[in-house]
Length: 116
Length: 286
Image (cartoon, rainbow over all chains, first blue to last red; front, side, top):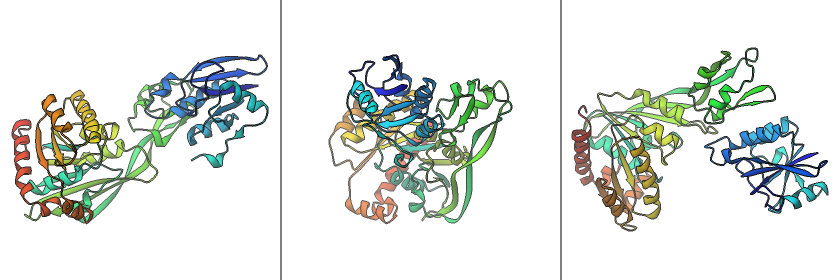
């Protein structure tokens, strides 16, 4: 399974960044390999608009099954949902803690009803 | 002449000054409310026999037969309104700025354009107390729409270069403000002597310098706050065109839709001098 997490920096000790579209990096963790890749999101940090859409595309192209962040906007959420990426919400814990919390079934799924 | 009234910070008095200028000009004026997200010029210039026109922007439509999802339109769009994903090209209508550039770059001729309702334009004529015609054109962005530049551009189509055109612009210094001031002969920046007023004024000044439009400053509520704005204007060699004191009575009358010239008639003459200076120095044709 592939879990993507929005993060401040490219390591597992980093804080989970609460902003999806404008997070500095995405950590893409492969549970089977126990290893991760770092995907840069710098181009979206200064986007005038549409950061969430581009970030959703980036995540979908990583083939992630699950995405963990603070919250998600409507356009990004629709793209992610249509591509069967499940979205989960975490507090501002470390990336490693967020992965463990997800695997222990302790994270809350972000649903359509929560999209503003 | 095209005279734009902008500010940087919101709530400094753009509409107060622009509607006062329209009346003080004592000539035929075309007045444009380009602040389409919150137009209020018509509250002060009460036009009669108002007509309403529905307005549309042109958004791309993808011909699925011809589209190869090559991504040329996506990489061209500066506003992330088009995305190619899993062999499909998806258009986000509400994010489109109506530039139609995607249609030019598509190598497969797969893009045509469809009208997308964004708002309305109201037009009417107000007769000033001195009997001069003020043509009022006011854009109103539909609720739920976020892209104001296409509507602002359509509002500005009624500008008549040989006449006096006064543009009440949106606050800020991003796309809506730039779209509104684009093509003006001169911009009056209305500010207030506060830290917020100065901060946003300086961004608006940098913006206008970048696009080479001459400008001057009107300081509203000039007896409050601090000397930051005047010090800044002195240092940057920016003309201070007029200073208007803070008057609770003016604020009260404003809330009732009364033109500031009714409360402080002496402003009329001062505004006429400002207009005269701008006309003489920055525009040969009125």
